[in-house]
Image (tube, rainbow, N blue to C red; front, side):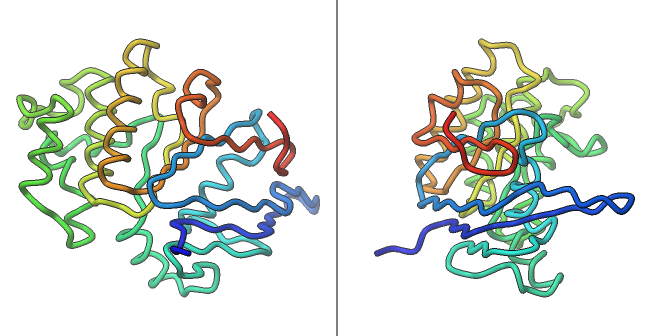
Length: 223
């Protein structure tokens, strides 16, 4: 049996605020294979963003295991965790999170350069595929929201990650543009063979992915 891109077992996370214990995740488990896409749904406050932060190594769980490409990340020291995250995991956000002082071309290349995995031919191919080739010298504030999200997708995919984490990646787009961007995203996921875990409130978009996991009050539940 091949190693999955992501395996989570009995994950738990609790926050403490003003002396109050606030459980956020309780006994969450999932497996995501390379090439598989999974929609993560749930009401606000159900633990979706916390789960993404834990998987990305931006926070640490209180219990359970997170195994990324065969490596348990929970006990890694901070520097090793940052290196693994930089080289194996890419993130796409609702707010695009482009660097405003960099043009489209440099934004596309940024993550791959940081990971020492920059491939100029692949990055150019991504720009062509995403309709960005003619925008290389433009700054983020000179392009549309749909174009900015395509830059964010290209930046993530330039890395050729093992795991792509997307947090409401079309939340700021109109329905038609969202459908176009999702089609481009899913096509790249299929071509690269990475795993995709996408947080979404949209049942319509969730149904386009291969599988669905619903969180309710920090636990896996029926949608």
